[in-house]
Image 1: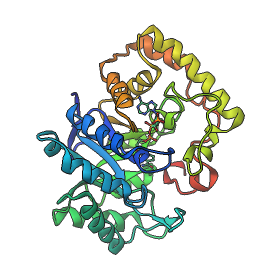
Image 2: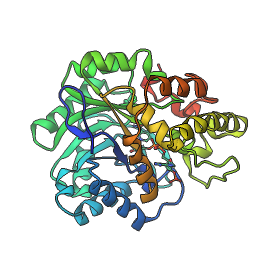
Image 3: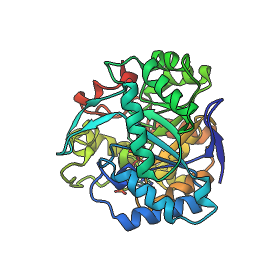
Image 4: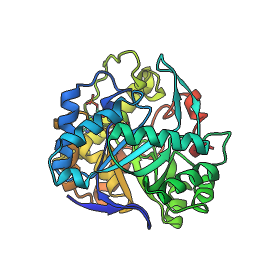
Length: 334
Ligand SMILES: NC(=O)c1ccc[n+]([C@@H]2O[C@H](COP(=O)([O-])OP(=O)(O)OC[C@H]3O[C@@H](n4cnc5c(N)ncnc54)[C@H](OP(=O)(O)O)[C@@H]3O)[C@@H](O)[C@H]2O)c1
């Protein structure tokens, strides 16, 4: 397994991380036994970074990871690092009701996450979205106190813009910014990525397959179930979907020329954007995981990167990456 270091103060982690969200929520039905087998296979393959959120399935995802860690073999389990997001508020019907970054709430969230995961510390802890009513300094300050107390090792951020990165970094060392970054989501390149680099903050990139859209496996006529995020995502609607899948067809030609799959090419492109970037892949099955890990063996030279750029030019995606109501919560989009 290749490794990368998250920022100047963060942990050394596997060059690919596993995001477990889809094992509990948002991407349709998931198979519990296969989910746990996938986490075990990832750990056995040397993946050390497992990403979750306490609100993914209202605790379901953390309980699942906790079970997978408890039943994993050594030494893989001892090397596992947990990256946990908190702050998103849910209701009993699964609705979303805002964000809470107040210091007392941060500590409350952490106490429950430690219990559900069955660990004595969380490796990277971050608020999922900035609470508009609480200065980021207070939220980060509360995590810094959790670090002091030994409950958390590193502080991360999620979907924040350059100004918030600076404000947070002035309070305490930040290991990484978790943010969407892929061939069709390149918004971080102008200001956010350069600022993260200036501040010595790493990036854990999510959506590298754009939630399956640019994985090469998403069929043009796929029906999405109730509660599937993609059913509301502008990029998966009607004409937008068809145009985005045209981009995937162009990418497929480049991938075939490299003897790689579309997903591997999309992941390898993110890996090639800098040693400070660690893609989180949302594999929910062992076969998908195996495919994703294959990206680590795919080297893209300048000619390959140019061919990919021609197939999927920056800004070519049709549709925003979130529905309007959710875009409004993204500090990174201000
Ligand atoms: N900070 C944030 O705001 C935020 C937001 C979203 C996600 N995340 C994190 O990022 C993680 C990754 O999620 P994502 O949405 O970014 O996932 P992604 O990797 O862009 O997409 C995952 C989806 O792609 C499909 N897929 C097809 N081939 C695949 C392959 N070879 N490997 C992996 N997936 C493949 C899978 O669908 P099938 O299983 O149906 O094939 C899966 O549901 C999440 O688990 C979560 O931890 C963070």
